[in-house]
Length: 246
Image (cartoon, rainbow, N blue to C red; front, side, top):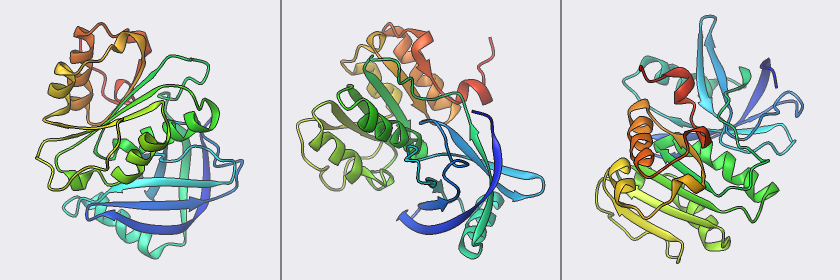
């Protein structure tokens, strides 16, 4: 699926928490097609394109969701927030990325995300529920604080309503309130790679997708490698834009 440049409409901007906002974009259904796990690039000016994971599976309706972390001290972030508030139309380039769901595989999924890396996993989970509704999914979502799990209610709902989905919330700070309850919902305290080190998981049996900063992805990769993970079945955009030096 080759990348296309197109104009789309901004139909909604909403705060998902004090630091993350959701954006809904609408365009021609054919032009907005993408595979679960891919990203788009948003044009800020003639020389600046900013990449964002697409947070929704393709529903053939031309609607795409984004989850955007707002960093007031970063120029691009402030410019983007201002642009979204005043612009009716945006220029996009999509799709991009090879970290896509292998829908031919029936292996269980191990999805590991930090912060807004959840957006990529959301698209993958939505595609699984639509096309492979019995495929096993273990979703690990890491954040510093509970409030940073900005769609925790949605992730919990998946685990509460689908027997094949487990949700593991990982925070570096103790919870200030209880997680939603469910036998497939658990909370782990600590940094994600340290938590995975002591977790009872068998990554060698899974297709593994990891989304986060390069340091986070490679730290998790090293832990999973000690547990026998098959490297040919692990996928991350980080491998393309920040390859590890050998």
